[in-house]
Length: 333
Ligand SMILES: Cc1cc2nc3c(=O)[nH]c(=O)nc-3n(C[C@H](O)[C@H](O)[C@H](O)COP(=O)(O)O)c2cc1C
Image (cartoon, rainbow, N blue to C red; front, side, top):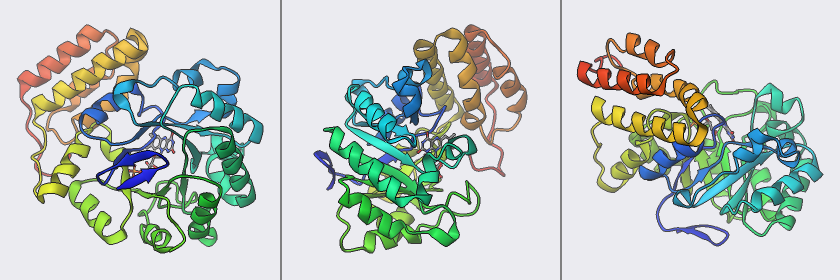
């Protein structure tokens, strides 16, 4: 059993990672259908939230079907973060997650995200003050450290627990690594091996298939696994991993028509949630992943990402179904 405050998971939870421009309500609905146990919103700027910026407040949209869900906030200013946490709590998520891991320049330049890894006192202050101000559980998502010479994640996890943080997700890379190299899950094991640490530790980084999920679950003993990139265009990964955990057997990859059906549902939900223009536009980043590895996909993909009219996009997806493309033998979608 895994407990985040009063939130209880009876199984080994699989988490959908917060992903800016990806893990919006249309995508989350699909991941939920395929078995994601806990999901997060895209990160929300505390400065945007307290100023009522449209882009930030829209990310507070959560739906009952997706519960349990966490709203993730980021920022560097204590008062803005406290206010943002209070605003997020009013949207009634199961939990609030603080982002102490975002590596992108735009964020760290403002001393937010992974930059807070360089200032442990500030991290602990932000965490403890937010915990005091909201009633729901507060969790943290972070990286191993700023760079290879400053990895203090074992101590950081314990001190966050002492501030009242109820779970921690660790993307097992440093900020300097960005997305390069391999995530080093040995650190997750070290964090878990600390006898003082009682809160759940979720492992994150480079889980791409059911076998790797099972291997890392056994080898590094996290309390759950968070999946990001491998779910993009592949939301059934949660179902595949769960099936493998319970049976030891691999589900076959979805057929072209099954992929098209999921992609169409994604598009429909995007249109419904974002409206025609943005709905079509923002789906463009997903097609390459939905149809990765298919021979002769390029002309279809080129049309999918240049067509503005939703009906035409659906028509191209129908044509793709009739074309019955084959998977290339060399790639592993
Ligand atoms: C497109 C994209 C957007 C992301 N946005 C966020 C975000 O908003 N908040 C966050 O904590 N991490 C974000 N991340 C990092 C992921 O949550 C995750 O930690 C990282 O991708 C490693 O996991 P993976 O190897 O399973 O993808 C993002 C990653 C990607 C690829």
